Image (cartoon, rainbow, N blue to C red; front, side, top):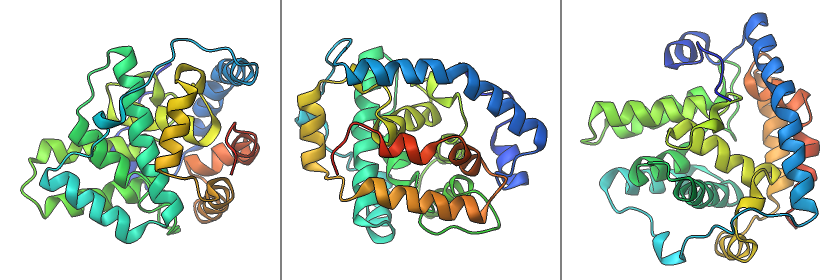
Length: 251
């Protein structure tokens, strides 16, 4: 199910990612509709039920070497904690694999860049606006200093800003959708039953979680306190911490 209309870049930049009461109700309604499916997937995963055991050969998970991708990697390594950096790599791997399995067309250079930068502001909460919106601005500024076409910068910007909107994960050919879906795998174990378990273990071995559950719930708590009318605060009020804590990953 797609997110409600109106959650575009114009909304993000004018509101700072703060929700009106009407928008909160829209997202709450969407959450109530999608929650049974999420719970069903978690239950199926718990009992070992799986769909196709999807995996990508690890040789296919070599980061792009374009100037844009290299700049995004350097920025992520310079700004993010080790745990959050590894989360970014896992998001790229999970999203690329889910998209391949569904036949979704996903530009790897754009997605890698967006994955490296999607949480670039999460560990630096600011009252002036949502981390995803500020992260989008951060990415746009970084990439604007390179010779990157404006339309590609805009796609990355919009993907980062939009990945926190409920319903975005319905379209894996869209950067916001791929980021949202793959972050859902790594945070909550959503859709993990679609991935080969041995392959998931190999990805985690390559990019260890490093106490990720504790660190991400603490970061989200700080973000929710800084931006109480944002999408992150809304998600946290509906069980973010519990969903992370009960995800099927040993820490």
